[in-house]
Image (cartoon, rainbow, N blue to C red; front, top):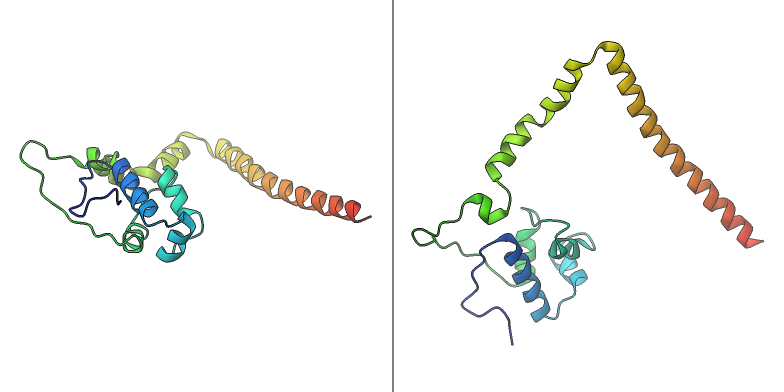
Length: 153
């Protein structure tokens, strides 16, 4: 028997949406991998969405709904029970937009506080950190190659 009734289910928050979609997937006896393939998502993406590592977005929600044979209906809330964007998504969407607009200002403010010599030292340190990662990857690849060569002997 289906956990989602034919009349639908009220989704008060984002976690409930995740749970409802996962329950529908289980009702259909669909694996997460088959949901990924039907929705055109990369392998493992549904698992990340259902466990909360990733969120449904404009490119993932609609294909997932279609793959699960679901539609979305919007119904006005009754007076006094209207949910704010913060309560619906768990994130204040207005503050999120504001943060996007000012995100680069933090770096610019940091740069303004440093002298040219301090900024050059900061940039050098960042470059060394990036190159260290490249060198470590290269060393690991060479070590793996050597270990495979020794195992073949």
